Length: 411
Image 1 (cartoon, helix red, strand yellow):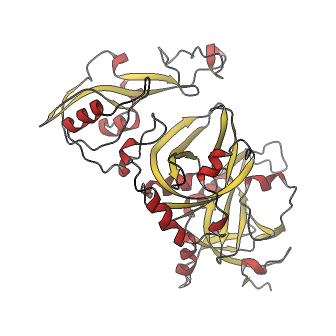
Image 2 (cartoon, rainbow, N blue to C red):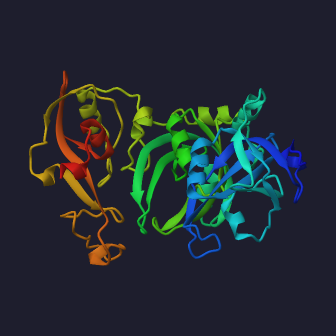
Image 3 (cartoon, rainbow, N blue to C red):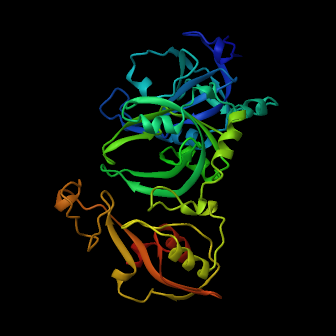
């Protein structure tokens, strides 16, 4: 008879059988699916999901789960960041420094990793009274925040720091709305832009979240209030932006609302930042839930006229306007109601059946079947007691939510 008994992460040994580890999930990856028809599995598809498990302030370990796509999707939707789980009968393997996969996993305190195979091991919810003691670990940094570099040091030396990883203690200054993208190979992805600052420089830094769990959790972040400790943020050359930038990678660990004295100092240092100025990306759209400033039409008009901008600079700010719609163009020509863009390069397309003419795009000039998206782009006029806003636009996902329809159906 085999007995299963609980082990702390720090007590795990290579090859130890009948393991039973309890902890809180502090990081989780998007699932990956593989076609296995030409492998020994020969069952069509196989998926993998990874997460990082923590059971004390000092100890945490990576867990990789393999199984059928249905099994993995069910697990990853049931358990997310913040879930307290029991990992039972997982295989313990020693991490190899030269293993390429180590580049894409958080660096952990444990020299081991846990492997969960469908049918051979189990992950289940931990419902015991100790649940809260594990949950409290979410706001405790996994290493000392004294390792954090200031944004000023990073920005002043960013070229010299290329291809390195750095730690940051920062406050969130902007949270964008979610965006749905199509990759060059046709995969649908969701992302969210956000910006950070630490008071060491007047500049903010824009970062992107691609992970499902963090995209969902970031919806509850608050500008100038949410503190983040980022471990192993990556500095690398961005081929798209053609410059060296700071980014979140699969190695990056994020701790929210860090419970350390330095957090208050950083929060106080950024209180002078203007929330209405949105962010450094003049085309970013904020998460509507983070907009708190209420303005009249007259106040908006006065702000637009008073605030000087450089030639070609786009002035953008966010506000709540309590106004009525005086005109909405739903009866005009179709071209005035919807916009058609290439899903890959975002170029405007005349017809949904056409390819874009961008020769640098995978779908450009008929290279392959067009991959286009149709979105509402509707002109509306607004009015309140102080004046009129003429030529506003109701676009994209917001238009679909309000109209209860999408651009493709409208066509």
